[in-house]
Length: 78
Image (cartoon, rainbow, N blue to C red; front, side, top):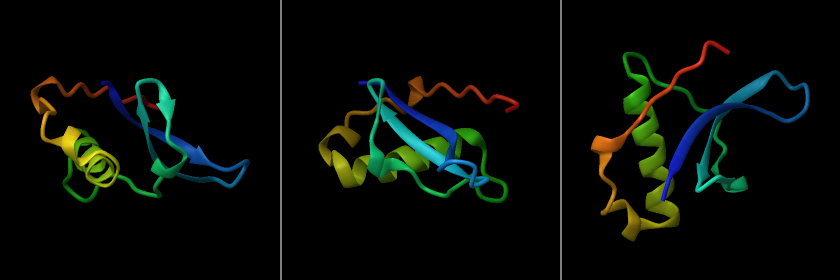
């Protein structure tokens, strides 16, 4: 299973943004949140926190099997 946390806009021309979760290449419509890393929080910490919150709600058994040592973070300038 591959989980991707990514930044995206919300709606057409709203100017609002946040993050969403994609699991194995498909975005879950319920995953979008108007959230960003908190003060002093790294992109890695934020991505893990966001993914853990999603998994706790949607697939808690899977959460126990995640190897967080394989976490990859790619931050774009966009």
